[in-house]
Image 1 (tube, rainbow over the protein chains, first blue to last red):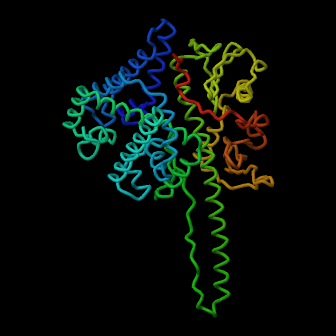
Image 2 (spheres, rainbow over the protein chains, first blue to last red; image 1 turned 30 degrees about the horizontal axis):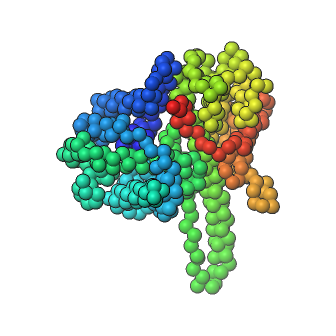
Image 3 (tube, rainbow over the protein chains, first blue to last red; image 1 turned 90 degrees about the vertical axis):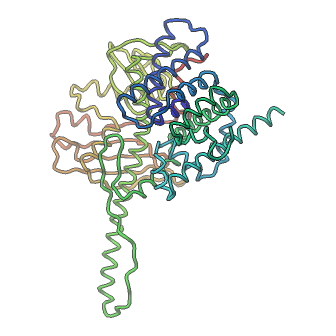
Length: 154
Length: 336
Protein backbone atom coordinates (compact mmCIF):
# COMPACT_ATOMS: atom_id res chain seq x y z
CA UNK A 1 0.00 0.00 0.00
CA UNK A 2 2.90 2.31 0.73
CA UNK A 3 4.08 1.91 -2.83
CA UNK A 4 0.66 2.72 -4.21
CA UNK A 5 0.17 5.62 -1.85
CA UNK A 6 3.37 7.30 -2.81
CA UNK A 7 2.67 6.88 -6.51
CA UNK A 8 -0.90 8.06 -6.44
CA UNK A 9 -0.68 10.46 -3.51
CA UNK A 10 -4.18 9.44 -2.52
CA UNK A 11 -5.42 6.89 -0.04
CA UNK A 12 -8.59 6.21 -2.01
CA UNK A 13 -6.71 5.83 -5.25
CA UNK A 14 -4.33 3.41 -3.53
CA UNK A 15 -7.23 1.28 -2.38
CA UNK A 16 -8.76 1.42 -5.84
CA UNK A 17 -5.57 0.18 -7.49
CA UNK A 18 -5.06 -2.41 -4.78
CA UNK A 19 -8.53 -3.79 -5.33
CA UNK A 20 -8.05 -3.87 -9.07
CA UNK A 21 -4.84 -5.77 -8.55
CA UNK A 22 -6.52 -8.13 -6.07
CA UNK A 23 -9.19 -8.96 -8.62
CA UNK A 24 -6.60 -9.68 -11.29
CA UNK A 25 -4.62 -11.82 -8.88
CA UNK A 26 -7.65 -13.83 -7.90
CA UNK A 27 -8.85 -14.23 -11.46
CA UNK A 28 -5.55 -15.51 -12.76
CA UNK A 29 -4.47 -17.38 -9.69
CA UNK A 30 -7.39 -19.77 -10.07
CA UNK A 31 -6.48 -20.51 -13.69
CA UNK A 32 -2.85 -21.42 -13.33
CA UNK A 33 -0.39 -22.60 -10.82
CA UNK A 34 1.88 -19.61 -10.34
CA UNK A 35 5.41 -20.51 -9.43
CA UNK A 36 6.58 -17.43 -7.62
CA UNK A 37 3.30 -16.07 -6.46
CA UNK A 38 4.70 -13.22 -4.39
CA UNK A 39 6.85 -11.80 -7.18
CA UNK A 40 4.07 -12.28 -9.69
CA UNK A 41 1.49 -10.51 -7.55
CA UNK A 42 3.86 -7.61 -6.96
CA UNK A 43 4.26 -7.26 -10.68
CA UNK A 44 0.47 -7.25 -11.05
CA UNK A 45 0.25 -4.44 -8.50
CA UNK A 46 2.96 -2.50 -10.30
CA UNK A 47 1.22 -2.80 -13.65
CA UNK A 48 -2.12 -1.83 -12.20
CA UNK A 49 -0.52 1.21 -10.62
CA UNK A 50 1.05 2.26 -13.90
CA UNK A 51 -2.23 1.70 -15.69
CA UNK A 52 -3.97 3.91 -13.15
CA UNK A 53 -1.37 6.66 -13.46
CA UNK A 54 -1.65 6.63 -17.23
CA UNK A 55 -5.41 6.96 -17.00
CA UNK A 56 -5.18 9.69 -14.43
CA UNK A 57 -2.65 11.68 -16.40
CA UNK A 58 -4.97 11.72 -19.39
CA UNK A 59 -7.99 12.61 -17.30
CA UNK A 60 -6.02 15.12 -15.22
CA UNK A 61 -7.96 14.32 -12.13
CA UNK A 62 -4.98 14.41 -9.85
CA UNK A 63 -2.54 17.18 -10.31
CA UNK A 64 0.38 15.37 -8.80
CA UNK A 65 2.68 14.24 -11.58
CA UNK A 66 5.71 12.05 -11.30
CA UNK A 67 8.49 11.81 -13.82
CA UNK A 68 8.19 8.52 -15.75
CA UNK A 69 11.83 7.79 -14.89
CA UNK A 70 11.05 8.11 -11.21
CA UNK A 71 7.97 5.90 -11.48
CA UNK A 72 10.15 3.23 -13.11
CA UNK A 73 12.83 3.56 -10.46
CA UNK A 74 10.33 3.43 -7.61
CA UNK A 75 8.58 0.44 -9.16
CA UNK A 76 11.92 -1.29 -9.50
CA UNK A 77 12.58 -0.77 -5.81
CA UNK A 78 9.10 -2.03 -5.00
CA UNK A 79 9.47 -5.21 -7.03
CA UNK A 80 12.98 -6.02 -5.88
CA UNK A 81 12.49 -5.26 -2.17
CA UNK A 82 9.95 -7.50 -0.52
CA UNK A 83 8.39 -6.05 2.58
CA UNK A 84 10.02 -7.19 5.75
CA UNK A 85 7.59 -8.89 8.09
CA UNK A 86 9.82 -8.46 11.13
CA UNK A 87 10.10 -4.74 10.37
CA UNK A 88 6.33 -4.52 10.30
CA UNK A 89 6.12 -6.18 13.71
CA UNK A 90 8.73 -3.88 15.19
CA UNK A 91 6.91 -0.92 13.69
CA UNK A 92 4.01 -1.47 16.06
CA UNK A 93 6.24 -1.04 19.09
CA UNK A 94 7.93 2.01 17.64
CA UNK A 95 4.62 3.57 16.75
CA UNK A 96 3.44 3.25 20.34
CA UNK A 97 6.34 5.41 21.42
CA UNK A 98 5.16 8.38 19.40
CA UNK A 99 3.56 11.24 21.25
CA UNK A 100 -0.19 11.73 21.12
CA UNK A 101 0.28 14.80 18.93
CA UNK A 102 2.36 12.83 16.48
CA UNK A 103 -0.22 10.05 16.38
CA UNK A 104 -2.94 12.57 15.82
CA UNK A 105 -1.06 14.04 12.90
CA UNK A 106 -0.69 10.58 11.41
CA UNK A 107 -4.40 9.92 11.90
CA UNK A 108 -5.24 13.09 10.06
CA UNK A 109 -2.80 12.54 7.25
CA UNK A 110 -2.95 8.79 6.70
CA UNK A 111 -6.24 7.88 8.32
CA UNK A 112 -8.35 10.73 7.05
CA UNK A 113 -6.29 11.63 4.01
CA UNK A 114 -6.29 15.33 4.81
CA UNK A 115 -3.99 17.68 2.95
CA UNK A 116 -1.11 19.39 4.72
CA UNK A 117 -3.05 22.65 4.55
CA UNK A 118 -6.11 21.17 6.18
CA UNK A 119 -4.11 19.53 8.94
CA UNK A 120 -2.35 22.82 9.52
CA UNK A 121 -5.69 24.52 9.92
CA UNK A 122 -6.92 21.91 12.38
CA UNK A 123 -3.92 21.93 14.64
CA UNK A 124 -3.12 25.61 14.23
CA UNK A 125 0.18 25.29 12.46
CA UNK A 126 1.58 25.83 9.00
CA UNK A 127 1.59 23.37 6.13
CA UNK A 128 5.38 23.48 5.97
CA UNK A 129 5.63 22.68 9.67
CA UNK A 130 3.31 19.71 9.20
CA UNK A 131 5.45 18.43 6.35
CA UNK A 132 8.58 18.77 8.48
CA UNK A 133 6.91 17.06 11.42
CA UNK A 134 5.76 14.13 9.31
CA UNK A 135 9.21 13.86 7.87
CA UNK A 136 10.68 13.76 11.36
CA UNK A 137 8.15 11.13 12.40
CA UNK A 138 9.13 8.91 9.50
CA UNK A 139 12.80 9.33 10.34
CA UNK A 140 12.10 8.66 13.98
CA UNK A 141 10.21 5.47 13.16
CA UNK A 142 12.86 4.34 10.74
CA UNK A 143 15.59 4.97 13.29
CA UNK A 144 13.63 3.13 15.96
CA UNK A 145 13.03 0.14 13.69
CA UNK A 146 16.67 -0.07 12.70
CA UNK A 147 17.82 0.17 16.30
CA UNK A 148 15.45 -2.55 17.41
CA UNK A 149 16.43 -4.85 14.57
CA UNK A 150 20.12 -4.24 15.24
CA UNK A 151 19.60 -5.04 18.94
CA UNK A 152 17.91 -8.29 18.00
CA UNK A 153 20.82 -9.28 15.83
CA UNK A 154 23.33 -8.77 18.64
CA UNK B 1 22.89 10.67 -0.35
CA UNK B 2 22.86 12.76 2.74
CA UNK B 3 20.12 11.88 5.17
CA UNK B 4 19.28 15.38 6.26
CA UNK B 5 18.64 18.78 4.78
CA UNK B 6 17.76 19.76 1.27
CA UNK B 7 19.70 16.92 -0.25
CA UNK B 8 17.52 14.37 1.44
CA UNK B 9 15.59 13.57 -1.68
CA UNK B 10 14.05 10.43 -0.28
CA UNK B 11 12.49 12.15 2.71
CA UNK B 12 11.34 15.03 0.56
CA UNK B 13 9.86 12.69 -1.98
CA UNK B 14 7.63 11.21 0.68
CA UNK B 15 6.51 14.72 1.50
CA UNK B 16 5.55 15.32 -2.12
CA UNK B 17 8.04 18.15 -2.32
CA UNK B 18 10.25 17.24 -5.25
CA UNK B 19 10.49 19.38 -8.33
CA UNK B 20 10.74 17.74 -11.76
CA UNK B 21 14.52 18.08 -11.78
CA UNK B 22 14.83 16.62 -8.33
CA UNK B 23 12.62 13.73 -9.34
CA UNK B 24 14.98 12.90 -12.16
CA UNK B 25 17.94 13.15 -9.79
CA UNK B 26 16.26 10.79 -7.36
CA UNK B 27 15.42 8.37 -10.18
CA UNK B 28 19.05 8.33 -11.22
CA UNK B 29 20.28 7.70 -7.71
CA UNK B 30 17.75 4.96 -7.13
CA UNK B 31 18.83 3.19 -10.27
CA UNK B 32 22.52 3.47 -9.39
CA UNK B 33 22.82 3.15 -5.66
CA UNK B 34 21.80 0.01 -3.74
CA UNK B 35 22.11 2.00 -0.50
CA UNK B 36 19.58 4.54 -1.69
CA UNK B 37 17.37 1.74 -2.89
CA UNK B 38 17.48 0.12 0.51
CA UNK B 39 16.71 3.36 2.26
CA UNK B 40 13.87 4.09 -0.12
CA UNK B 41 12.41 0.62 0.40
CA UNK B 42 12.62 1.15 4.14
CA UNK B 43 10.69 4.41 3.86
CA UNK B 44 8.19 2.77 1.58
CA UNK B 45 7.55 0.11 4.20
CA UNK B 46 7.10 2.77 6.87
CA UNK B 47 4.64 4.55 4.60
CA UNK B 48 2.75 1.32 4.23
CA UNK B 49 2.72 0.64 7.96
CA UNK B 50 1.61 4.18 8.70
CA UNK B 51 -1.33 3.76 6.37
CA UNK B 52 -2.25 0.44 7.90
CA UNK B 53 -1.81 1.72 11.43
CA UNK B 54 -3.87 4.85 10.80
CA UNK B 55 -6.61 2.78 9.17
CA UNK B 56 -6.75 0.44 12.16
CA UNK B 57 -6.85 3.34 14.59
CA UNK B 58 -9.62 4.89 12.59
CA UNK B 59 -11.62 1.69 12.63
CA UNK B 60 -10.99 1.31 16.32
CA UNK B 61 -12.87 4.54 16.64
CA UNK B 62 -11.97 6.99 19.26
CA UNK B 63 -8.68 8.69 18.42
CA UNK B 64 -9.70 9.62 14.92
CA UNK B 65 -13.21 10.34 15.99
CA UNK B 66 -11.76 12.86 18.39
CA UNK B 67 -9.64 14.24 15.61
CA UNK B 68 -12.74 14.54 13.50
CA UNK B 69 -14.48 16.30 16.32
CA UNK B 70 -11.68 18.81 16.46
CA UNK B 71 -11.81 19.20 12.74
CA UNK B 72 -15.49 19.91 12.88
CA UNK B 73 -15.04 22.28 15.77
CA UNK B 74 -12.40 24.18 13.87
CA UNK B 75 -14.51 24.61 10.80
CA UNK B 76 -16.84 27.52 10.62
CA UNK B 77 -19.05 25.84 8.08
CA UNK B 78 -21.67 23.23 8.74
CA UNK B 79 -20.79 19.59 9.06
CA UNK B 80 -19.89 17.99 5.82
CA UNK B 81 -20.57 14.42 5.03
CA UNK B 82 -18.41 12.87 2.39
CA UNK B 83 -20.77 10.14 1.43
CA UNK B 84 -23.50 12.23 -0.09
CA UNK B 85 -22.21 15.78 0.29
CA UNK B 86 -25.27 16.68 2.25
CA UNK B 87 -24.87 19.16 5.04
CA UNK B 88 -26.51 19.08 8.40
CA UNK B 89 -26.98 22.43 10.00
CA UNK B 90 -25.39 22.54 13.38
CA UNK B 91 -27.50 23.87 16.19
CA UNK B 92 -26.36 27.42 16.94
CA UNK B 93 -24.01 27.63 19.87
CA UNK B 94 -25.01 30.20 22.39
CA UNK B 95 -22.00 31.84 23.98
CA UNK B 96 -21.96 31.38 27.73
CA UNK B 97 -21.53 34.76 29.36
CA UNK B 98 -22.17 36.07 32.81
CA UNK B 99 -24.73 38.85 32.87
CA UNK B 100 -23.59 42.12 34.52
CA UNK B 101 -25.11 42.57 37.94
CA UNK B 102 -24.79 46.21 38.84
CA UNK B 103 -28.39 47.12 38.00
CA UNK B 104 -29.65 46.35 41.47
CA UNK B 105 -33.01 47.86 40.75
CA UNK B 106 -33.50 45.58 37.80
CA UNK B 107 -32.54 42.46 39.68
CA UNK B 108 -35.79 40.71 39.04
CA UNK B 109 -35.61 41.47 35.30
CA UNK B 110 -32.06 40.19 35.18
CA UNK B 111 -33.07 37.10 37.08
CA UNK B 112 -35.73 36.55 34.47
CA UNK B 113 -33.26 37.02 31.66
CA UNK B 114 -30.78 34.70 33.34
CA UNK B 115 -33.46 32.10 33.74
CA UNK B 116 -34.50 32.41 30.10
CA UNK B 117 -30.87 32.28 28.98
CA UNK B 118 -30.37 29.19 31.08
CA UNK B 119 -33.36 27.51 29.50
CA UNK B 120 -32.16 28.45 26.03
CA UNK B 121 -28.65 27.26 26.79
CA UNK B 122 -29.95 23.99 28.10
CA UNK B 123 -32.06 23.58 25.01
CA UNK B 124 -29.23 24.47 22.65
CA UNK B 125 -26.85 22.18 24.52
CA UNK B 126 -29.37 19.39 24.48
CA UNK B 127 -29.92 19.88 20.75
CA UNK B 128 -26.18 20.02 20.11
CA UNK B 129 -25.69 16.92 22.20
CA UNK B 130 -28.38 15.07 20.23
CA UNK B 131 -26.94 16.04 16.87
CA UNK B 132 -23.49 15.15 18.11
CA UNK B 133 -24.65 11.71 19.16
CA UNK B 134 -26.41 11.30 15.82
CA UNK B 135 -23.23 12.26 14.02
CA UNK B 136 -21.23 9.72 15.99
CA UNK B 137 -23.75 6.99 15.27
CA UNK B 138 -23.57 7.82 11.62
CA UNK B 139 -19.80 7.91 11.72
CA UNK B 140 -19.59 4.46 13.28
CA UNK B 141 -22.15 3.15 10.85
CA UNK B 142 -20.29 4.62 7.91
CA UNK B 143 -17.05 3.15 9.13
CA UNK B 144 -18.63 -0.25 8.84
CA UNK B 145 -20.05 0.60 5.46
CA UNK B 146 -16.70 1.86 4.25
CA UNK B 147 -15.32 -1.57 4.63
CA UNK B 148 -18.36 -3.21 3.21
CA UNK B 149 -18.62 -0.94 0.18
CA UNK B 150 -15.04 -1.74 -0.71
CA UNK B 151 -15.81 -5.38 -0.41
CA UNK B 152 -18.99 -4.94 -2.40
CA UNK B 153 -17.10 -3.42 -5.29
CA UNK B 154 -14.61 -6.20 -5.03
CA UNK B 155 -17.27 -8.86 -5.04
CA UNK B 156 -19.14 -7.23 -7.88
CA UNK B 157 -16.06 -7.14 -10.02
CA UNK B 158 -14.74 -10.50 -9.08
CA UNK B 159 -18.23 -11.90 -8.71
CA UNK B 160 -18.68 -14.04 -5.66
CA UNK B 161 -15.63 -14.97 -3.69
CA UNK B 162 -15.87 -18.03 -1.53
CA UNK B 163 -13.41 -19.62 0.77
CA UNK B 164 -13.99 -23.33 0.91
CA UNK B 165 -11.82 -25.23 3.34
CA UNK B 166 -9.19 -22.56 3.26
CA UNK B 167 -9.18 -22.24 -0.51
CA UNK B 168 -10.33 -19.10 -2.24
CA UNK B 169 -12.66 -19.47 -5.15
CA UNK B 170 -14.37 -17.00 -7.39
CA UNK B 171 -17.56 -17.84 -9.12
CA UNK B 172 -19.91 -15.78 -11.17
CA UNK B 173 -23.38 -14.93 -10.10
CA UNK B 174 -25.83 -12.29 -11.14
CA UNK B 175 -27.81 -12.64 -8.01
CA UNK B 176 -25.86 -10.36 -5.75
CA UNK B 177 -28.49 -8.90 -3.54
CA UNK B 178 -27.54 -6.60 -0.78
CA UNK B 179 -24.88 -5.17 1.41
CA UNK B 180 -25.34 -4.52 5.08
CA UNK B 181 -23.07 -3.11 7.71
CA UNK B 182 -20.54 -5.68 8.70
CA UNK B 183 -21.37 -8.29 6.13
CA UNK B 184 -21.90 -8.77 2.46
CA UNK B 185 -24.62 -11.13 1.50
CA UNK B 186 -25.38 -12.41 -1.93
CA UNK B 187 -28.27 -14.68 -2.64
CA UNK B 188 -30.20 -16.45 -5.32
CA UNK B 189 -31.76 -19.85 -6.09
CA UNK B 190 -32.28 -20.43 -2.42
CA UNK B 191 -28.61 -20.07 -1.65
CA UNK B 192 -26.71 -17.36 0.12
CA UNK B 193 -23.16 -16.25 0.08
CA UNK B 194 -21.82 -14.50 3.10
CA UNK B 195 -18.64 -12.60 3.51
CA UNK B 196 -18.23 -11.57 7.10
CA UNK B 197 -16.19 -8.60 8.11
CA UNK B 198 -13.41 -10.96 9.07
CA UNK B 199 -13.08 -12.00 5.46
CA UNK B 200 -14.59 -15.42 5.95
CA UNK B 201 -16.74 -16.17 2.96
CA UNK B 202 -19.02 -19.13 2.76
CA UNK B 203 -22.06 -20.37 0.92
CA UNK B 204 -25.12 -21.70 2.62
CA UNK B 205 -28.43 -23.15 1.53
CA UNK B 206 -30.50 -22.01 4.43
CA UNK B 207 -30.27 -19.94 7.53
CA UNK B 208 -30.09 -23.03 9.69
CA UNK B 209 -26.67 -23.82 8.24
CA UNK B 210 -25.22 -20.56 9.39
CA UNK B 211 -23.54 -20.79 12.72
CA UNK B 212 -21.87 -17.39 12.69
CA UNK B 213 -24.08 -15.23 14.89
CA UNK B 214 -23.41 -12.08 12.99
CA UNK B 215 -24.18 -13.68 9.66
CA UNK B 216 -27.39 -15.06 11.16
CA UNK B 217 -28.49 -11.60 12.08
CA UNK B 218 -27.70 -10.20 8.68
CA UNK B 219 -29.31 -13.06 6.84
CA UNK B 220 -32.40 -12.73 8.97
CA UNK B 221 -32.56 -9.12 8.03
CA UNK B 222 -32.10 -9.98 4.37
CA UNK B 223 -34.86 -12.56 4.44
CA UNK B 224 -37.21 -10.06 6.00
CA UNK B 225 -36.45 -7.66 3.19
CA UNK B 226 -36.68 -10.23 0.43
CA UNK B 227 -40.06 -11.36 1.64
CA UNK B 228 -41.31 -7.83 1.13
CA UNK B 229 -42.34 -7.16 -2.44
CA UNK B 230 -41.78 -3.44 -2.10
CA UNK B 231 -38.09 -2.91 -2.73
CA UNK B 232 -38.38 0.61 -1.40
CA UNK B 233 -38.73 -0.79 2.06
CA UNK B 234 -35.22 -2.13 2.04
CA UNK B 235 -33.57 0.15 4.51
CA UNK B 236 -30.26 -0.50 6.12
CA UNK B 237 -29.06 1.38 9.17
CA UNK B 238 -27.02 3.65 6.97
CA UNK B 239 -29.99 4.37 4.77
CA UNK B 240 -32.14 5.21 7.73
CA UNK B 241 -29.47 7.53 9.09
CA UNK B 242 -29.15 9.20 5.70
CA UNK B 243 -32.90 9.60 5.63
CA UNK B 244 -32.84 11.42 8.95
CA UNK B 245 -30.05 13.68 7.83
CA UNK B 246 -31.27 14.45 4.34
CA UNK B 247 -34.85 15.17 5.30
CA UNK B 248 -33.91 17.24 8.30
CA UNK B 249 -35.59 15.23 11.03
CA UNK B 250 -35.73 17.00 14.36
CA UNK B 251 -33.38 15.06 16.58
CA UNK B 252 -33.59 14.89 20.33
CA UNK B 253 -32.13 12.65 22.96
CA UNK B 254 -34.06 10.07 24.86
CA UNK B 255 -33.37 8.85 28.35
CA UNK B 256 -31.07 5.84 28.26
CA UNK B 257 -30.85 2.82 30.49
CA UNK B 258 -27.71 2.79 32.55
CA UNK B 259 -26.27 0.07 34.68
CA UNK B 260 -24.50 0.82 37.95
CA UNK B 261 -21.10 0.54 36.25
CA UNK B 262 -22.02 3.31 33.84
CA UNK B 263 -22.51 1.01 30.86
CA UNK B 264 -25.80 0.98 29.07
CA UNK B 265 -27.45 2.44 26.06
CA UNK B 266 -28.71 5.78 24.95
CA UNK B 267 -31.28 6.87 22.52
CA UNK B 268 -32.36 9.38 19.96
CA UNK B 269 -35.81 10.25 18.78
CA UNK B 270 -36.00 11.71 15.30
CA UNK B 271 -39.26 13.28 14.25
CA UNK B 272 -40.58 14.54 10.96
CA UNK B 273 -44.27 15.36 11.22
CA UNK B 274 -46.62 15.81 8.28
CA UNK B 275 -44.89 13.31 6.06
CA UNK B 276 -46.83 10.56 4.41
CA UNK B 277 -44.00 8.93 2.50
CA UNK B 278 -41.51 8.73 5.31
CA UNK B 279 -41.57 7.35 8.82
CA UNK B 280 -42.62 10.23 11.05
CA UNK B 281 -40.72 8.98 14.08
CA UNK B 282 -37.51 7.00 14.17
CA UNK B 283 -36.20 5.80 17.51
CA UNK B 284 -32.60 4.72 17.70
CA UNK B 285 -30.97 2.90 20.58
CA UNK B 286 -27.21 2.70 20.66
CA UNK B 287 -24.67 1.21 22.98
CA UNK B 288 -23.23 3.96 25.05
CA UNK B 289 -19.60 2.88 24.95
CA UNK B 290 -19.23 1.99 21.29
CA UNK B 291 -22.02 4.01 19.70
CA UNK B 292 -22.98 0.80 17.97
CA UNK B 293 -26.63 0.89 16.90
CA UNK B 294 -28.66 -1.69 18.79
CA UNK B 295 -32.08 -1.09 17.34
CA UNK B 296 -34.12 1.19 15.16
CA UNK B 297 -37.86 1.58 15.42
CA UNK B 298 -39.53 3.17 12.44
CA UNK B 299 -43.00 4.48 13.00
CA UNK B 300 -44.74 5.15 9.71
CA UNK B 301 -48.04 6.03 11.25
CA UNK B 302 -51.22 4.01 11.11
CA UNK B 303 -52.59 3.16 7.70
CA UNK B 304 -50.05 5.16 5.79
CA UNK B 305 -48.26 2.22 4.28
CA UNK B 306 -49.55 -1.21 3.44
CA UNK B 307 -46.73 -2.95 5.23
CA UNK B 308 -46.30 -0.44 7.97
CA UNK B 309 -47.10 -3.02 10.61
CA UNK B 310 -44.11 -5.11 9.53
CA UNK B 311 -41.85 -2.17 9.87
CA UNK B 312 -43.10 -0.77 13.11
CA UNK B 313 -40.29 -2.39 14.95
CA UNK B 314 -37.35 -3.25 12.78
CA UNK B 315 -34.70 -4.60 15.02
CA UNK B 316 -31.28 -4.29 13.60
CA UNK B 317 -29.48 -6.33 16.14
CA UNK B 318 -26.08 -5.27 17.26
CA UNK B 319 -22.94 -6.68 15.81
CA UNK B 320 -22.40 -8.62 19.01
CA UNK B 321 -19.18 -9.96 20.32
CA UNK B 322 -17.13 -10.52 17.25
CA UNK B 323 -13.38 -11.00 17.56
CA UNK B 324 -11.41 -7.82 17.48
CA UNK B 325 -9.57 -8.38 14.21
CA UNK B 326 -10.50 -5.84 11.61
CA UNK B 327 -11.40 -6.59 8.07
CA UNK B 328 -8.61 -6.07 5.60
CA UNK B 329 -8.55 -6.65 1.90
CA UNK B 330 -5.29 -8.49 2.34
CA UNK B 331 -7.21 -11.35 3.85
CA UNK B 332 -8.45 -12.16 0.40
CA UNK B 333 -5.07 -12.67 -1.06
CA UNK B 334 -3.98 -16.26 -0.80
CA UNK B 335 -0.85 -16.69 1.25
CA UNK B 336 2.16 -18.14 -0.39
